[in-house]
Length: 346
Image 1 (cartoon, rainbow, N blue to C red):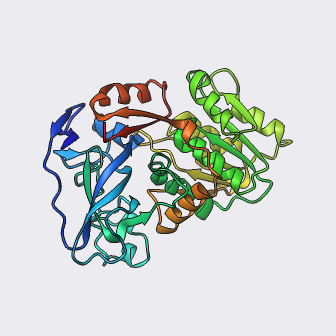
Image 2 (image 1 turned 180 degrees about the vertical axis):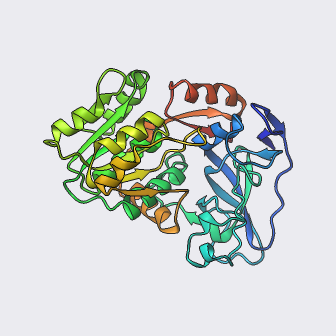
Image 3 (image 1 turned 90 degrees about the horizontal axis):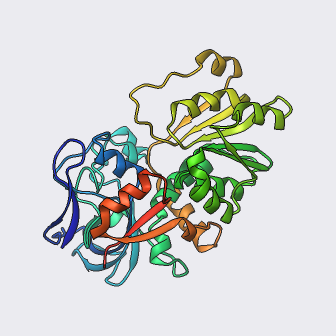
């Protein structure tokens, strides 16, 4: 089968290669991958900025159809359309696993970086990590389930947006746009998105199509903190969702928050360390909430919102074949696309 492989450590070292179709164990299913999404993590792996174990087939966001089941599999059958949590090899014994936080297990080795992933024609997955796709959700839309589950866990389960809240979102990527839509679902009263000049032609237009924002601030030509404070009569934002990973945005988020506001950190950064205005955060008594990956219930929330047509995702998506992976990564890194899905059947 065709697969996109990170062959060794270092910058680049990605290639389209032939790999054997995976052989499943008794507790696994074999899935024919329909669509597989490029995540920011995949871009970090390309640039050697995220842990991974090469050679490894990349990719962890997907939708597909079950084509074979192991002898111990009871809840899934050939023909089922599924998505899956990338929490492979979690030990099940540590305090994190026992408390339902398998996504944080030290033994976890996700598809796409720890074990072979979904930028391929087939992938094998443990039954316990699967979710059935609702009948009303297409395979293309369902391939967005993993980023939606991350946002659902962080924004809806952990950040507790209250109806009427003034919410600022730093960033204009797919996570930011999904977060804005979920903030709207939660009843946010005003949603302000902050981005750059490079976001105006593509990302802002798509965000506006989803009707997820009330205002856009170009941080390269405007002072986001001043605007937020002016609009809130000096109080500040109730919640800032930081989805950019940019040091300047992280700093601005703390200044833009009200006293007792919530900093919702969901964007990975390339830097080892970020300087923040610590004393300002202390004086404001802000709540800091960081996130890594998704919860079981986050997946249920995401799929239910998809089925209820509460999320507008298709406008974010550009579909490309595996063969064009170099162009696909380039489009994302230059801001000319928001979300690219590989059609793994092309």
